[in-house]
Image (cartoon, rainbow, N blue to C red):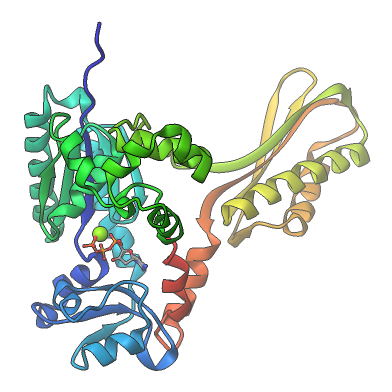
Length: 373
Ligand code: DCP
Ligand code: MG
């Protein structure tokens, strides 16, 4: 049996931060609004309203340049807590229509709606409905792309911004891809595009004509992938990210142990691994839990919470040792030990928020961080 053609949506809010500011401050509507760093503090533009874009202003541009291009522009600091709340609203809308939602950032996501619709026409109707719900619940507009794969859905959503809805059907895809400039292909940045241009390649047609082997020679594995995109082949699944609730590590011991010192040593190792994972994820957690399974399989847990949270081994160990000493009496043997940090929060978010509420009000560095998006 032939597999059903997938129906993938890409939905992306228009001028996200700036639109939220215009929504919440009606006096800014219809005006050039720039959200980001202050022009006199070497800040950069996070985003610009469509009115401001007419002056050539765009994300990641120095705010000073933006001010020069449009001296009447209204500069505003970012209000992340508001943007995050809107993001939760739109993600909730997406989840009403499919469980397969892959957020790419606060304001955009892929949706695999294959199981929710019968064909592309219905997928387009669904995209229209989602746009309507976003407008109704958040007073914001989104642009939607509809296609049979991620790469084309994303390009489609960008076609008719703002408030657009574009479909690229499997039938239309080949013609569309042939004319597509190389820099529009997924994964082709400035460097790769320049490289391809020196080879005289401009469009999808050129990529296809060069062939998979040559592209692989020029760009390695990525070249092969690019060739497949040029042929309209992109099987990457929409991957919902599960919200991580905790970071933990536990070990079932080879032999049951009674010695407190030995247990402390194991806890230190476990805490070190938990710490590394928290650092990697840039997270800390409000609650630290010690888990002990006795030799008779009885399980006990002891949780400790504190507002500033736990992230480093030195913060965890005194608490773990103290809890452990209250449990262990030397009679019962232990067969499993575990360390869990939960109630996770992002260290980065805390830092950013702190930047924003400082007197300067301008999260200058922030936009640069987001630049790589
Ligand atoms: N952002 C940022 N710095 C960047 C790019 C984006 O801070 N270099 C932030 C501000 C944007 C938000 O992320 O509002 C979403 O990014 P998008 O790329 O979706 O841009 P917009 O939503 O602002 O505009 P568009 O209408 O083009 O989607
Ligand atoms: Mg957007």
